[in-house]
Image (cartoon, rainbow, N blue to C red; front, side, top):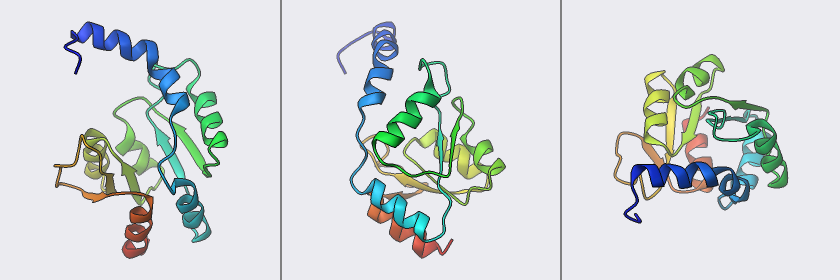
Length: 146
């Protein structure tokens, strides 16, 4: 994007990712939809690839962010990159919501239904059912009758 070399890009990323992650905001309606899903009887598992060496204390940072943003969860699982499918299978996850194509492929190959949150980076991917926002997620989970 800035005509940086791979080394310059990586240097910027690793020097700034933790600061950026701590300041991220939730998507609209995330908190209220997650609460509705919980009230409907769903278990809420958050599986994040933050345990990959890029953060000083990924568990503490993630728990604080979730608390600060009033995001309910039953279980938080931090993994290294490339383990989401196996982790979902091990934890009997019925539906995984993710925006990364690689994660969606991994999860799907492990027999778990995937809802891909549409972003500008994956909007042309037709392999997975895409969702536009948290209200759309709620509708699709109800439609799947899980």
